[in-house]
Amino acid sequence: MDGKKTYTLTQLTKSIINLISSNLNNKTFLIICEISQLNEKNGHRYLELVDTKNDNVTSKSSGSIWRSTYETIKSKHKEEAKKIIKTGNKVLFPKKL
Image (cartoon, rainbow, N blue to C red):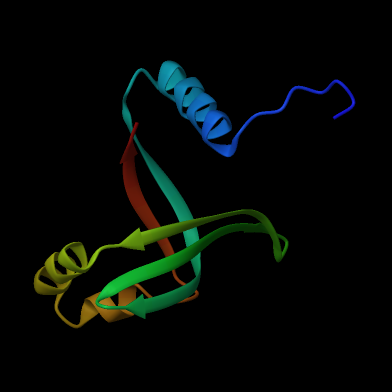
């Protein structure tokens, strides 16, 4: 490949996680993003998360909420869960590396 170093997706992902972890000293931080797509299968929720600027997608990632976790959210927030976890909403969640 023209002498260019090749990395697997796993190697790249691990390098990014290591870089972030070393800079944040394993602290918990918050991530805000918009749910652009939401699909349900077998009780699990599969999300496409995006960040936008001037109506242009600047970053995209996928996420999932396993059925047991969604049931916990639903039991805590009742009908509000459906209003919170829906396409078009911005969500804020904690992340620790």
